[in-house]
View 1 (cartoon, rainbow, N blue to C red):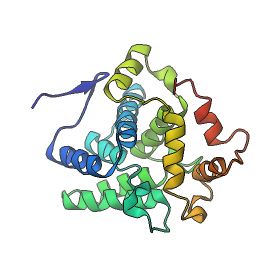
View 2: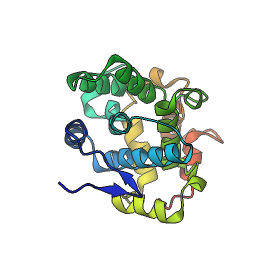
View 3: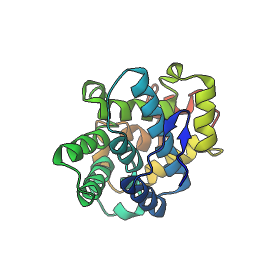
Length: 214
């Protein structure tokens, strides 16, 4: 097996990471899986730039499981999709013998990533995952990366043409059956946008106006 680096970041290739990759590849579209992988690399780059310590395998798992809750596996769930995703990651980590503390870190990171104003005050795993989601979707924090690093991330995990609208569509489709679960998160804006009632300054407007080409 060849060790792989993207923008100088080692992509985990241990047994747990490979199992997570295979599982997510079975249940997520390339659009979501590539977004998850970009999020991991951006989070790692941000962590290194800030001098933060974090468990790479846990960050990778958190990024990959980030949006499993909006897939067809949860078409009947009434929970927040973030909670479904966090619960799925917790079950996976328990199966791989990780500690309760490790599981709690990943659960918080996934569950809180769409809740404004909280993640940046939490431990590194949660703070970095949320910041990297912002980077991948709205271009926030891009000043922390060189253009060359950004290009390498996009080459490894492409943003397909029409990504912005496709992403919003997938997010809406995974939550239309549980609109009450989106209150207080960026997902309320996703459903509002889907219903053509976008609020000025909302998450969807920031995503569509981002400097990413598509």
